[in-house]
Length: 121
Length: 108
Image (cartoon, rainbow over all chains, first blue to last red; front, side, top):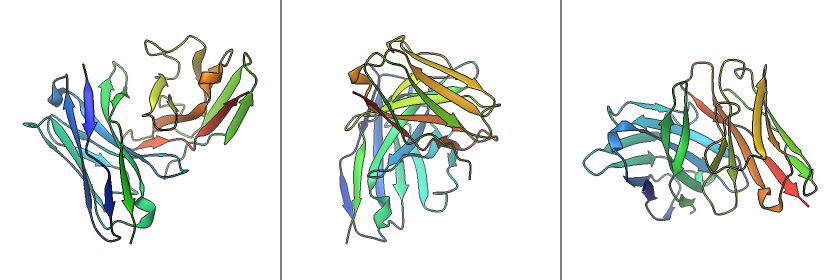
């Protein structure tokens, strides 16, 4: 069965970086893109970016473009999202999600369990 | 940046119909998707490509789209449908994903 398992909760100081992992299983990793989405407390879901797990190409939200790096390790069937220059308003639950391609478009079908990142001095 | 706008809240009695709208300039050309989000759980896709229902999603969930507005309809809402609902789409280039502002649905 398809599973996306994310790394555990993190506490970081302002200005630091955090790297969240998303280890996948149950499907051919390189056949699907992976997206990153976050939700800050009381806020909406925010799309952060995605990576083509096959060729490593990425697209990031303009909001995060300068601070986010999305990578993958095909040997580990895992994707990673690193966010730098952390601020208190980066405190959020971060999710990875698999992209399922249809004939016309795509949707996010399987999600990780979420990783809480807390930014506090 | 591109925005998708939803009403903050919708309240219905059990068995009644809840309608949630999502407004965006690119929706005439881009599909809308709807996710249900309950506290402590990962988002669940309930509608994709405007009006398609994934397997396992109850028939009371339906979607439509016309012009710059997409609509999620819950016909005969149940108490277990209480959740936050988010529309999702992309900007006109297709390169930037966007979630709507979110709608809290209360069934009581």
